[in-house]
Image (cartoon, rainbow over all chains, first blue to last red; front, side, top):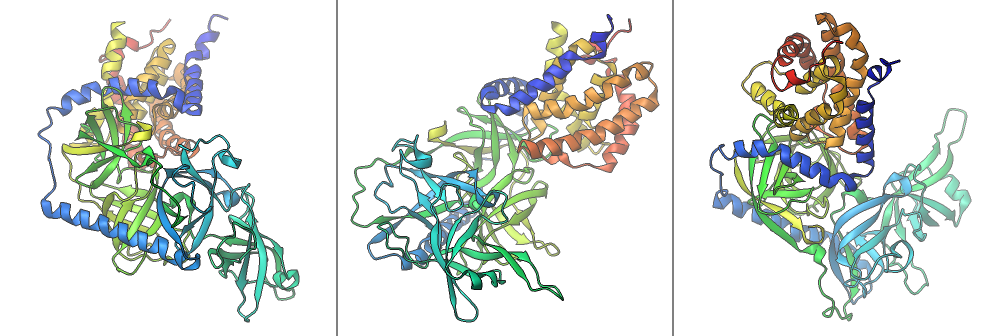
Length: 452
Length: 160
């Protein structure tokens, strides 16, 4: 009997159970991790100080090039985001471009169904409820105190309910058939297990709808008579027919028609809301979510760690997920530690899912918002597996410049990552070359004010 | 108390030393697997949870995933290998090599699984055949060595 405790390691199993609790409630245990890892890194910090003097800045021509690229991204994104929807709105509306802070909640098709913006409810109070991206209707601006924003105050980040949210109202829409006819129907959110985010619910001609076989037909909004009518002609997505294909002895059978929006909401970095030109805006203070501090710091290569893992020494507390930038060049994100430190994983070494923006070389093309994961990488080169829900994006991308999309409060969109070229053999891979070099570097840590 | 001070000071740095070793062009030493072997086959059973915390802190320095993920990634192979201890106590190299293979496969696989479940992917989820070969060849003699060196020496289980 005395041998039983030795055979069953209670302490070990207890520690494993504790780790599971830790992962279930990460926010509760975050200070513990910050302090334990911070203390463990004290010795490498001491060694890091002996590792040479930091490189202070890039060459001026490189800095100018990055600045020009960032300006180009901003102007091209703004032009393409606003122009198409603006043509379909009544005169007297002006666009307000908002960055996405957080994309969350699972909705139809298992996709993200809610966005938090970098503008407050109060700032957008006078705006129309529809939210667009290019010519696409994305969703509805929620009002504080109602629906999913019931607990929000006017000072909180504005909340967008995407069309695939379970509580989103259905829309009247239509499509043009190849034979010249048209179909009108109601589109609502699909279930989370459905193959697309939106589902057609009611048809004006069910008999013709049952014979619909063609994927990829454009679905656009139709005018309604209600006061908050959605502008007609906005794109909702493209059809995706679900059913049985024709066989030698059987006719095809359509079971359901879904609508696939052109954007993956999880990859969105900016959206547009529309404000009546006459609305007064000067009395509302700008939301703090848009202001970000830049804390100076130093990154050192961790002694012996794989290249791309760095130790950060900053002048202030570093929040987890903060972007590390060297002369406008995105280095990676940090895990904040106590004692003003952090552990940085470079973009090339990271394996997390990124929201990214590709600025194509062709000047007339819109910037492409995409999701991507680095599948392999070394010092200056990363192999990125990308995907975009935008059907207009060619499956074989051209070369361009890669920027961060919105990756949380502390990692804003528009930070330059590097030059991206398509992989010769695999069209789903981009090779991203970043001009980062090993060794200590002076950097800036981006800290979102609302989360510091 | 002093042995614990040296453990938490030095054991995590072993992961950085292994990186320096690899960067020098020498055969790679998988510190996570070596730590699993030491904890499962040699270390004092009563001290296991805190010894595990020390090595998990070391792996959290060089890997993207968080500390609790490292505890699971290292702790589960230890729990699996622990029943072998009765057989491996007299240093049968074959069993240690078997344990090294098991841990060398389990650690990246668990890293991948935990990365998926807890949305904390990391680059060390890649299973490399060459690393397994080196683990079999290098880790049994290294285990013999580390249990005679501080800070591991202070935690070797004494036979009753």
